[in-house]
Image: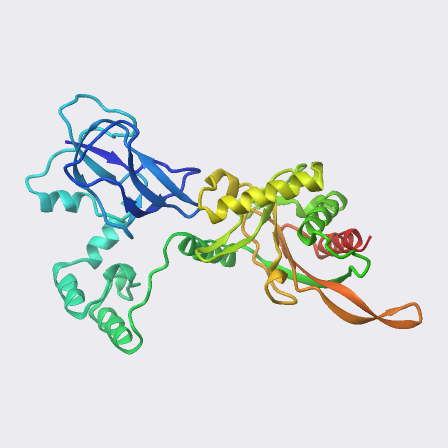
Length: 370
């Protein structure tokens, strides 16, 4: 028997969720035949077979989370040696139950000990009787151990409000990213209005924002940077790689529009359209969603005037654009209705000063109002 372990599906992503198996136990497969569709935090990835052989066992069902390096498929093969990402022959256990204890599906190696503590036979029996998913609980006991009170409290909540739905895929990764930002970033938000009354009808609003951000980064490069909170070091970038937030039913994606300061409006628009199409098709490569030097959230296409957008480390800043509206403004000695775009700029105050952020905002407004 040989085991095909879940390989790194791109950029060191630690886990993936089974979407659909394309083979069954007992099937004969060829090299590169599609085995399974896996959903990572970035996209849906099709995983091919690294060898020819007969499928002896599938580890996990649709909806299960498998960590990188955990067994995904067991091959019943007489061939010697390893192929592709088949990682050696694992020591056979005396029975299938002990083999399952060796590899807990959906549990990272670092978390197996904690799960073993939580999953004592008595606790598992209680959770099963009350219909509680132990994996969804945060234990209140020593070392994070799940207690009887934890299980009974969860069962009471389930009876009163229905079972909680575990976050999966993109939403789970978004929750982790937001928690990381909250723990690491010292955020400050500036808000202003840009006068865009002169914009002609049919203006490509997103491209105007992209170009204005490029102009602001060139005027004040301090916010086009990465910050290392552990080493207290800052890395300024010459190239501007802009993350553009894209809202989908599955959750928030942020593909990266590369080198925005050196490309034409037409090229940028084509590139952004292609990225959004790939996001909607869940075919965007993970590499296309990493490496942003700052981010744009154009939430005004939906609703909202101002916001406190979340800075994702190691980035230093994020620009938010609200709903364009008309409001009275003093022009000379007259009051006139003018179209304005509300702007929000959140920056990490560890890495940038208030003056740098204010000058960036001023440059951004000037570029939009020119």
